[in-house]
Length: 242
Image 1 (cartoon, one colour):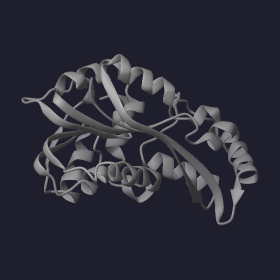
Image 2 (cartoon, one colour):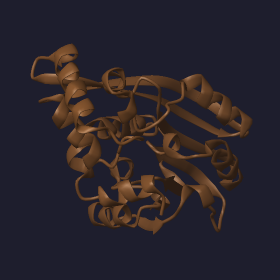
Image 3 (cartoon, rainbow, N blue to C red):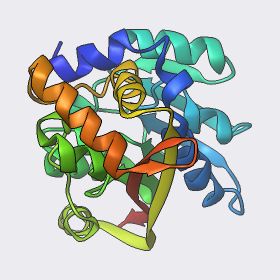
């Protein structure tokens, strides 16, 4: 199990208590499908504890929620028992039948080779099959990156970079837009604790002295009423097999 996957797996029980931005993004993404009849064979990758999954129920047909982290799947099954749950690694995804809907929220930015994954997902879609996805982009946790770049969990991509990857994979876009959300935390230290509790561990280990100074800088530079702010940005996209 990779370190990223291990982090998410160990965070399954604490994830939802801190994932307010992720829940807001899932709610926004769900709005895109509400005017459309939710039916057919649907597969959701990186479902986690089911933030998006629950928003899309009931579903007319077969809905399978998957995640590569076993404890996330276990938690998702408890929170949303009405759908089928399975431990599936998005990097090696397959389906026994053509899929009418592919869904993913807050997943693709974590994959090492998203281009290869998107090509594989394209093959899963039935003729006329559609996809609905949200991907966190550059600008997410920009305040933390300003004072402590070592703590950024990812090298983020821009929306236009993601659009290029989708088009290269033969996935035609119907609608896409950017999204921004701000959360408020009692302090920079509490923000970082929440980030860890969601499994979003930093890419590099930071020394105690360096961390203390950075958190003090954060509290000073990004203070708002009620604490400090944190920015989350994403790219939402709906489309179909090209």
